[in-house]
Image (cartoon, rainbow, N blue to C red; front, side):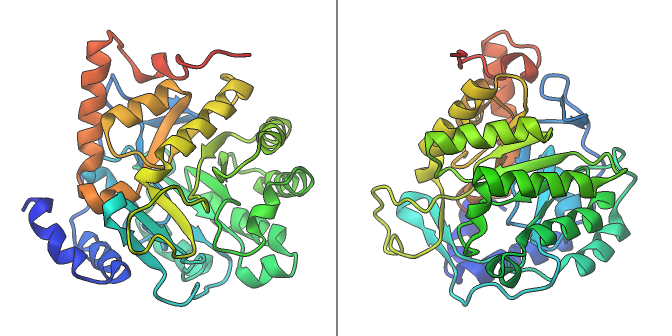
Length: 353
């Protein structure tokens, strides 16, 4: 059935209820065969072989229920979470809003999840040996009470210890605007302390560590984050999460508090990616996220320095097979430009200072 036909029915439901309904539907979907690597689109990033560069961003599969099935929808990888050490309910409902006229979403979930212990048991049941199944990243965060008490770093250490054996990569998420005090960890001194602790906690596990940052950064913030990532040998940088800024919006929910994602984030997240690419060059892989809904936008993000891209909000408006369409579009654009493999064009539009 065409998504255009069922979208009005989903949009008649509360946004969070529709979200849970889609998760339930995917849980009943048979687990598909492994996704065959595409010679044009496959690449190796942080030592991981990705069959294509289009991934599912964190936030959709919060508890690790269906990430292992998302390659059946065309995704080259899926990132589940954010998972915190202890279960927490998140912020009061309603906390998820569609901004239809703006093709956007505002959320203020606040890391609602069932906790890392329950998720680890669930993931272990379907997890194949690392590197032999679909690529799965696990996004980790801090509990709200720990962050408020200044104990957030300890929660990330717990997350690394618990989840590293189950993940192809771990993402340290310090970029959500919905946990008070979390983004303060993006400051240089706090970030140095956090990354030192996280990298030490990884111990003998070779699990790559990615860092996810906000788009709402000043130039000095970009400089500090880039330097810290290099100093602590972070494996990749994800740019970016939702924004707390509010560009001109038309929807009735435009004034809701929380992180804004979708089409209004496209330009801001692209510009922040360019900032990091100019500073870092090819020394650190970048993953572009925010406002990607077409092959052209994904192509622009790759040419601006992203080795991989992720999407989530666009699925609300474009349907579950968007990743397949973007991958087909990427191949068409690459064929047009005489590109044989996606890695050839990473960052070609960005000149180093």
